[in-house]
Length: 305
Ligand SMILES: O=C(O)CCC(=O)C(=O)O
Ligand SMILES: [Fe+2]
Image (cartoon, rainbow, N blue to C red; front, top):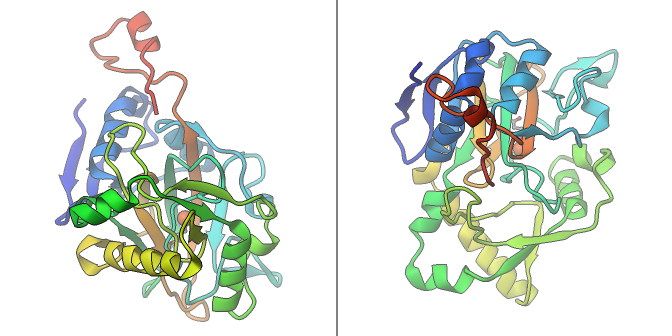
């Protein structure tokens, strides 16, 4: 079985015509992961997934991360969270950071171990706004002037969920999902500013418009200047892809290679509901070439990351 992949027009992203709920999808796990590493963002239209299917689809790309904000975790399906602007009985049903939300980030950069890949599955889609925007942080790094690439090659940045919470609250008039979330209260961590991808070896720019506090070893002024310059470069139009959701879309992104953000959506007019699953480690075993290999060779193929 071949994957049918149509690259998007820019430097990254591809549409894949593949039913993620079919059991044959498992035979394609290594091809799907290879496609993810090559294209960085994969779009699978017209999926019909229940929660178990979404977890199974996530596990094609690695080990599902169950350390999620418990307030919005889907009960009975560890690792799935709800993202939504919908209010039921006076309570938000999902993660929501205000109608004007824009926060460029890589998932879980406030933890020591970054998410490997995230999947979003769209169920209720606004007809206006509420895109998820991606930027090709890998190409953006490659396009930096050589002296700047050299300068940042060994720098590390401090990522802080406290700072993220404070900045989200300031941007949204008090609201921040992360502030009261069960992931809050973690100590800050450092990551390379231009990390090397664990599989492809390509560097990218690990930035965050709210979560990154400073660059280690620079004074705050130099640090702010450099972070602003890099973020402005990385989020310039030529690296952007905005995904306008249709119900049934699954979008998967390589969290070591791109940055993303939600975008404004008027919750008084448009309902938005997505389910999310993410993987934080390689699968212990990923079947490879099941069509040609023996069961044993298929079982012993591991993917390092
Ligand atoms: O709501 C969105 O468009 C993006 C949410 C997000 O950042 C995530 O699921 O990691
Ligand atoms: Fe995210």
